Length: 200
Image 1 (cartoon, helix red, strand yellow):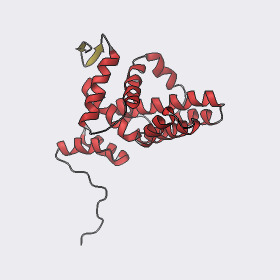
Image 2 (tube, rainbow, N blue to C red; image 1 turned 90 degrees about the vertical axis):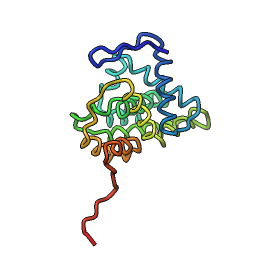
Image 3 (cartoon, one colour; image 1 turned 135 degrees about the vertical axis):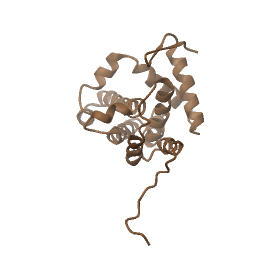
Image 4 (cartoon, rainbow, N blue to C red; image 1 turned 30 degrees about the vertical axis):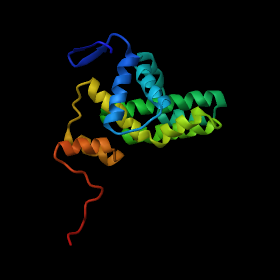
């Protein structure tokens, strides 16, 4: 297992980041009762490792998500695959691992979830019947589920301030995430889909 040192709330991973994230991903999958094949497990671990690189983050942030999607849709097949994958990966990472960073932005987590889901689903359509097609179909159709997995990994790795109950509730309203609902319940709140406007 990787050795971890926490300095002023920041976690440094000194060795074996793949194994470090694999243990956290497996733990989150088990905690949330999510069944995946080894391809998805490896993909999530690789995604977390990929964005340890500052360069990878900066590259993905160059254009707004809608512009990235537009560029992908008008590109040739090979470039389209690369652009859609990048869009899906970045959206999944931010909406899962760093969703609290969206608090101060014009767009919220639901926008990233929607764009990432579209990117992966479109990417699955590019491939004919294959392991890749099935994998990206799964990532697209269960995007919110995988967002919750990365969010739990993030919670395990860092100390957050996102226990703000109002913010949690706002996030639940936008995503209907089961994980966020369970966090609210731990705070003694039980989210409901609708609030009656009349008393009978």
